[in-house]
Length: 127
Image (cartoon, rainbow, N blue to C red; front, side, top):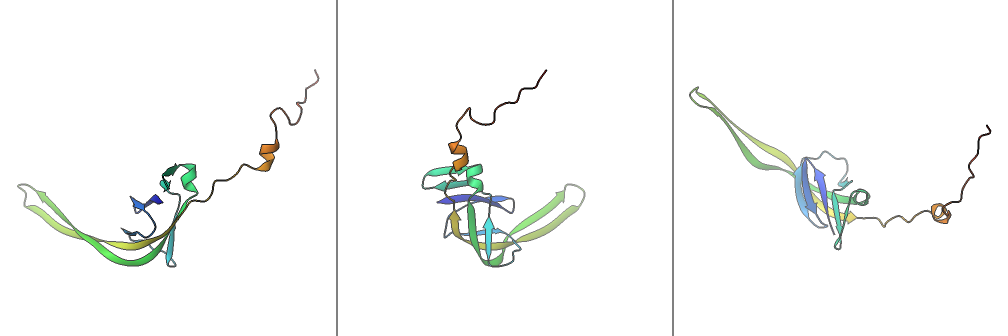
């Protein structure tokens, strides 16, 4: 079973046991839950939309680290303008613990017992 989650403006395909690196998350506690999800695949059956909104991905915080360095160089020709800059984004390591998709809901007994055509009779207005 796998799911596609969205965090930090990016999408990640995850399954239980994966360790992923996402943008820095400030969270209280040692677990993080993601829902609604974009796509959930349950043994070959793909769920999207309302079916995927019920699913939940639970992840355990493993640690934090800095990502790869990004070099920024600004340059304008013939004007003597050149600037160098670097950036390292803080990242959070997550270990995916579980991908849960609850069983589909059964229709309520009240709706199933009603037959078409039954119900309150229409009231006619006197003229």
